[in-house]
Length: 506
Image (cartoon, rainbow, N blue to C red; front, side):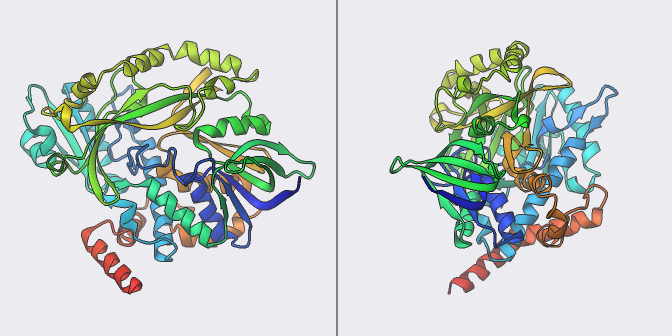
């Protein structure tokens, strides 16, 4: 059987592969890139707009990115890191729009205020201290705080209607938040890559991956249409298959992939498209996770803009399935257990009994019980206005760390071979929002010989590349002005973008 060779192979047609492919095509346009996706189209799994909250994660509203230290002060270091990473993503998207490589940014990113909402004296105190710690930082300039019910009624009328205010209540708001349709962005990027000559094969599943004698990687790929087996090889392979990445990482046999397990968690949202309700709420409002709930289950009520239609999503409610992908196999979890990660997986099971109990309770919830949780946000919510939507699967990393064996990780992590010939992305949120920063890490790890010569182009694509925004108020202002203008993140710039597009089409 003949083997088709490429310079780079990307496994999975999600936002991560789309981002890495787009970066490489700008840095080394002559490289031959091939993409293999098991589904019929791009962005059907975790990148799909219905499978995530669409929040441009910038730490503006997510309370789990800021923690209270023993001395009572608030640690905002993670919030700063996540925000900087989202600014990097916005800069790269702006470059693509400015270069006319993708168009109509309003089709994938729109301005939506980000808010944090809490109830009870303890949480109000925490939120006020969080606001004081963040509002003076250049990255979070413009954040507002109020504990006045009348002001809250202006900010979130849907949530305040019929609310009994019998305990302290407060919220923060920042107008610079966004709603991102990562599914639309993923499809745009793959459209761009196709125009650049990238070979994209849908309905093609990678079944095996092996190292060859010359140091490259050979993939066994099954054509889902014909059933035929194909052989493809490349010197560099990126595994960006969402929950399916773990199995392929294990098949590669690299030592760095040993001892790692995965724990799948599915999500569900309550969704309404009732125009009357949608019109009364325009924000992404995050609360605090209940005791024992994982960070990914922080309750939030989100304005979503999908195909230019607004709706409201509330959740996520956790569910459990042994599948690692929404369109995966019921045997995914059991087949991921290997001799090298068995002890790690068993330790995780023992250590995470509260999480297991929480998931069981979540799975057993009736619609009315979910509605009761929704009424913590929307007191007058009626069951007939809301429907349950099953979102995507997330596979949390399990590994041995300094905290002990079988530690469950919340976040994303790049696993790469020592020689940089193969890399895989594991984990979940904040995921898509930080795709560009994560893929820059892949470039630094896997192409150390080239990264220095690529810096001028990287600086062109990402003006803040190599610099920290943390202590540069002027640079922050410049970056915000640039991305807001280019991505049409205001009504004025949106009108200019629309006029420009109309002229170009004419």
